[in-house]
Each structure stands twice: as structure tokens, then as C-alpha cells.
Length: 117
Image 1: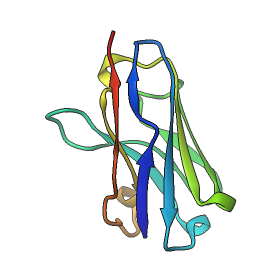
Image 2: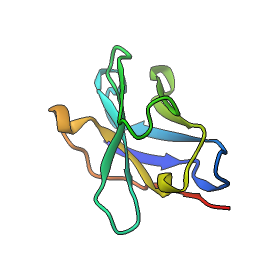
Image 3: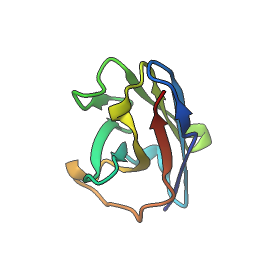
Image 4: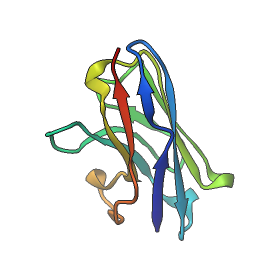
């Protein structure tokens, strides 16, 4: 499985961004997926997950502001991020939701999100 995140950039506080994750090499529709982020100097953390049947969960820090979704026909996953805060600054990556079981794939390219005025 190959993973690639894209869509990051510089945004002002209160702004929005939409991240995309391209998945290739496996049957994407069967995989429970997750978005992760690694702030500068900190450990990687799980931000949001979506199961193969579309059930979603969010970290408390992003609940109500971020929305995870998937398009199985396109082998794509998305993260809509609204009301961004400086503390959302991080490299965002995608993978399976391996903390809840299953295979952790090799980390692909992440995408940097910088929230700053």
C-alpha cells in the first residue's frame, strides 16, 4: 500500500484547508483509515478515523472543526479542516487506523499545515 497526503499550506487562524490522501496498491474500500499529525518537536497523534462502513471518530482537540470522509471509488480520503488554530500546525499524514488493530502501512509523504498570521 502506498500513501500520499496533499493539500497542506499556510493559512491564517480561523481559516480552512482540505487535505487529501491517495491510497494505492490495495483494496482501499476494505481498510479502516485515519489521519495523523505530528506537531513540531512532538509525537505523532491520531486526529480522526473512518471505518470501511463510514463510521467516524475524532480527537477531542479537533471535534466539531474537522471532518473526515472517503471516496472508495477514487481510492481517496479527505480531511476538511475549519476554524484552524495555531496549535493545528503540524505535518499531516494518512494511514490505516492501526492503533485500533490491523496493519500499519509504511508512512508515505505527509503534508505540512501551518496556521499563522
